[in-house]
Image (cartoon, rainbow, N blue to C red; front, side, top):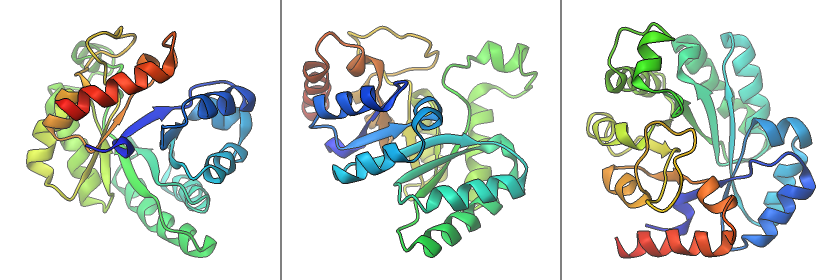
Length: 237
């Protein structure tokens, strides 16, 4: 386990708040930029992170027709980020188009291409919601597996899944496929809107490559101490 495997979300609304959090948590080396901050600030926040030698998970979860997804991935790859997301439910054609576009965009910009990973199912969605609200007839673990296998077959580098599914997905998809697990919560933190969670140590032991841990750190009274506590728990697990 290394500190690089813990990704902390910059889930704030503006550049000033983002910089304050980055500066406060100097030990964090991997940050997630999601929809709210990127929509508010744009790619400028990526330059802020790169100037501080931080790794970047650009979590925009692209979901559109293949041509549009390809264009978005081509542009995003040029930013030189480390991880980039697309929804698996965009479909096989979109996933394949995104895979090609990421390579093209990175080559054109002269940067290393990001690892392209597919979101299998948002961790805020429960098994009941999958069946009742989304009308998906598959059991949740089976659905997540099908999405991960489609992503792997389309040439993607990995998938986003809840820690509760990662053990099965790791066993079937193999060791060369990345798994990023949000919805990770220490025993001392509130679950919030996460429906399918494990502790950080449990998630790593189950096969996660990266953990996305937000509010237990960023919403803590003392974020630095919360970060150190999680690192310590993982080091001794």
